Amino acid sequence: MAWLEYVLPLIFLFPLAAMAGIVLALRSLHDARVHSPFDSHLLREPGQALRNRLDHAFSSLFLNGALGPLISLAPLVYGMGRMLFVQRQDWVEWALYGLLSTVLVLAFSLLLVRDYQRIRRLKLGLACELAVGQELERLIRPESHPYYVFHDVPADSFTIDHVVVTPHGVFAVETRARARPVAADGRELNQVAVEQERLRFPYWQERRPLYKTRQATRWVAQWLAQQCGASIPVKGILVLPGWEIDSEEARSDIEVVSGEALARHLRQSQPGHLTQAIHDQVIQLLQQRASLRELKHLKSPSV
Image (cartoon, rainbow, N blue to C red):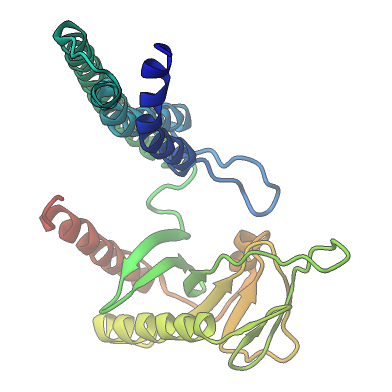
């Protein structure tokens, strides 16, 4: 039957189709949208619309870069399969397969160029949006404001998630995300008990989050004391978003909170008092320390 000569070569396309299915399944990894663990709403930042468009552009780049070679090879693979099932070779037909593959290569190359140019434009637009947003934040958080927040502060061999400076002390804030398990009856278990050296979750326990928070607190206290020449009140805070905290057996050196009222908790907590001169000096030191991370990032080779 002559039609089998055209159907049987499709067998050779199954591996390419399987790889294309895997690529489509992995596309979801490019979804950079994040939801708040408090109310499940999408978190929005300055330039969020451009962030979403940039996410779609990277997703398109991923699909075109991964699916392009597979689709471009499909005519050649089908043609090689046809050669096994026909008795007489038709070179015009093989030339058409080659021409089709060439056209597909050119088409996907143009798509990749388009995605590259679009990503460059979107990144430039996002940079401008962030710069303007940063300037607008000074309306509600001026540099002379008594509260100052630093993110990803580099220590000697680790990074501190957040460091908060208030008129009443300095806070080293560490954040840990843990998924809430579900009981056999479908009820979500969201209570964690804080003991002296460990966190007791519903089905497991951990010591490292408390250890890392104490390590960050000690480092900040020692570093500030060395730089300022005076003892600075430093308090450690471990944030577990979405969890109910039982702190009856906890030590008093650090605090474990759920995160919903973290800002109010920081305003009310008073581990000590900072004079205006020490307050400004601490902020200046942390600004210099935080800039070290940007310098290391600029000096690191791109891959």
